[in-house]
Image 1 (cartoon, rainbow, N blue to C red):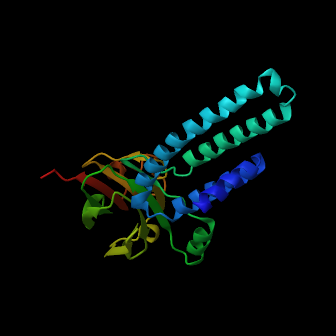
Image 2: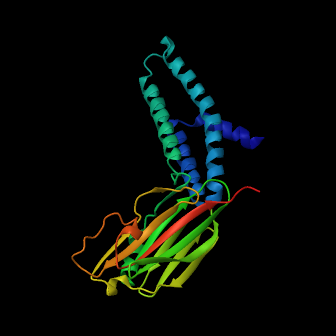
Image 3: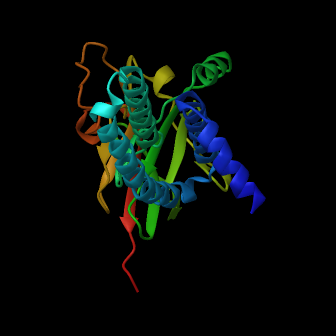
Length: 271
């Protein structure tokens, strides 16, 4: 075909600078495509891209080192500038490959951690005087149920109310907002955003002498059926009582009033 013949002529007329520009162009297109892909397609796409890279990179490098060996023969003596350019192209290729490997860095399976919040989002939250805590999780392949409970302590006794029980996505983000009157759960998935809210019968901030607020900021490993404390707002009537630092054991904190939120991921048995 004429198109292939013209492409061959163009390649023969090209130098290392043009080839470097082509690599940068294709690498940039790959990044854009990777960002635009839906989350559920990213893992298969990364696997396919890795396979294509391995299949094409090895023959290319074999051909490169064949030319490198020719540069070492006496008939090619004095061609150090050519060798330097080819070495630069090799380094450039390796750098692009390293960048491709680092494009998609997500959570490991069965992990839950605090999700980053942009500075713009944080400024908006500060303006509306709402405290929003955001987490992200990733599960193994399989079917899981997500259970979010609101724990309320009054007169030193803890009782829980179910906020959500439903199917869990393989990977998603969710947020909690505690106000003086309600607890609100916001789930952010590829299919959309879901909101759930239940009344909160206590206002720890206004009804206690000393109040502490803590939330999960580090990573946590998800185990099927294990309860993970997400946040706790604890209050004491006597301001001289020590405030415990192990807030995740909120039921043993000895607080007089409190609110806590926990999540449980349970894997459903295969049929």
